[in-house]
Image (tube, rainbow, N blue to C red; front, top):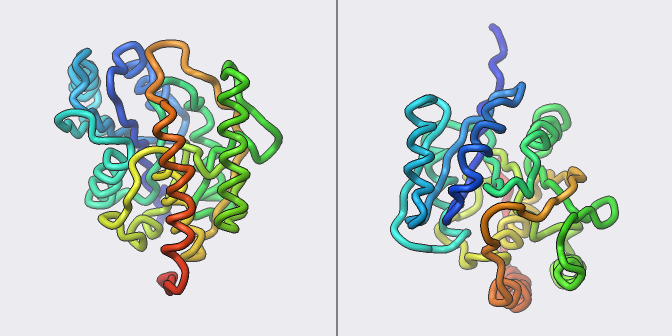
Length: 249
């Protein structure tokens, strides 16, 4: 029997990304390996969803959209995307920003980590081989890098970039984690997902990438998101004490 390639989909949450969305879709679709795309748009008033629908008309089997009303948070957008991707039979589900801070070509490196080396969680890591961030203010670099060190100390999780937003999950990871019980919406969402994958014993691999700050559009980052991560990590660690995490066979 001929072996079929695993199915990959890239989840791209959007809010006011009209400057980037069609270009990022074209870049992902143009890769040598197949990655389908699911955009989760939180009611962008700038017409992002309409631009996505133009691409859906061109590529109805490859590009999809979930439209939600209002800004509901990054974490809930990804959870909606995870559930959609699982229901539609995808084997690997990848998180990615719309603004080219993650290079589309690096999707191939995450794919290789999963398919060739057996990673069940592949993380595009800014910090696994030094500090690979371009065009961020020094204060933000220090805050992000320091937060990563803090997470490692508090949780014991040996991941250099726990707040990374460029991550590929095998479907069994998302089927094992209770997505309805995920509590955080911002940076802490990324930490919580990786921490639960770690606690369940899934194989995690960090793939070094260079993260480039957005050129077009405006950043959605704010100090409240960092605050959620700061205190959320402690809550994560405390809530895991005494719990039994059983990895499925």
